[in-house]
Image 1 (cartoon, rainbow, N blue to C red):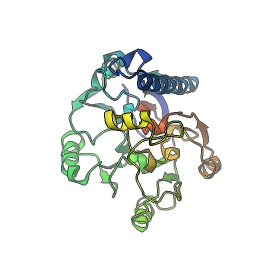
Image 2 (image 1 turned 90 degrees about the vertical axis):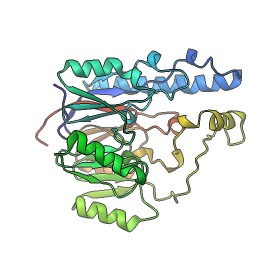
Image 3 (image 1 turned 30 degrees about the vertical axis):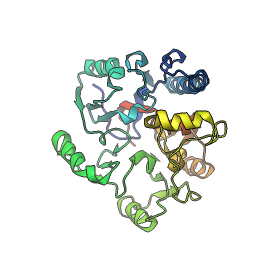
Image 4 (image 1 turned 180 degrees about the horizontal axis):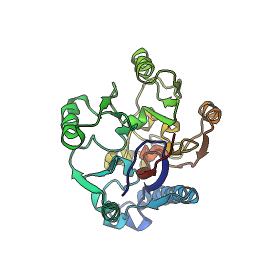
Length: 315
């Protein structure tokens, strides 16, 4: 049976996301636009394949979504953690347009004698729920949805102690604990003192590294890149035709979106020397697996994966 006890137990089985193949963009009539999307999708798939290869080299069993079962024009399952959640030995699958792509994965988990629940609460997924073993931390994308999230917990795991992060947005966009005793966080520029109090109270004695001191909280929702400036035809088309594919990369600190292999090894898409040194002092090695189009998808390594099974250890 698959199960997860603590986030630093050895990762045994995980999902790695998938992007569309170049043949899946025939619904776009503009040749130049279609070609640019094909390049982004192809290079994203290459990077995700490379990530899967790294995990396999660490003896992690890797499962992938079936992209051919996902309807056209749907945001591809590049971020399975936004759809899947494993709490102890129960799997929760969000009922959305990408759910069909996970059918073989769900079947595989079910074959391990695990319970699988399909649900419709969009805030309760692996990017918003962080099970530390003795405490579940969670967040919601919008405060008005808090009651729905609480109802979900009452329905599915009311006996587990839980604590809501004080702010809204994906929890794995706010902080992570790559190894016991270390937290990497995105600085809250509006309520920094309150954020500090949260970590001091709930994680006394832990090192907390705020990795985005230069970000001043000015969100830029429209996507663009060095290759595609804001006034380019491609950037204008993307922002007007597929805004549901885009997050808000301007507020994302990709360095904290970390996948833990175990307490001695973790993977990030973007290096940070302060965090690397802090982890090294704890005996934890940081591996970098770049995602070339992370800002397009608003995608980090943690989001690009989903834990299914971890083998218990003594740490």
